[in-house]
Image (tube, rainbow, N blue to C red; front, side, top):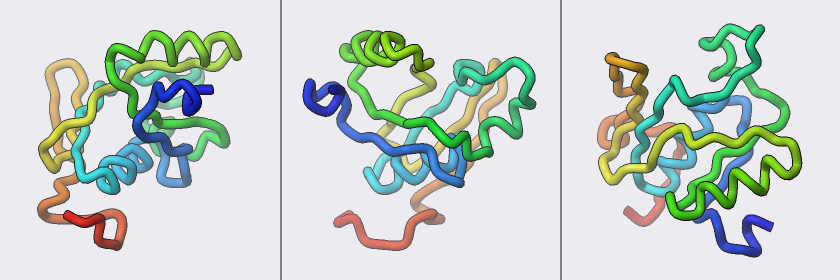
Length: 122
């Protein structure tokens, strides 16, 4: 339904790379960066956060959605009793930046490294 309504510009299922690694692969393939607010990532209360963002959850998706469509997409997931949360934004710079409260760190910089081998026309 999200695709039919053209509410997302890109999507990827969370792979063995975990949530952050999968987001990094989506961003690299899209030739963009991302800024992720670690505090906004939903997680089960009884799971260690550092393990949660690295694990393969078995079911999960990363979607690139224009801000004006975010509420509609979240409502579609909620209708199916699935948690959906905005966790950051895609950026034009080549970095994957993680931030939490006062701390910020660059995880990947596409001008110096690559997760995915291939030429995306850049």
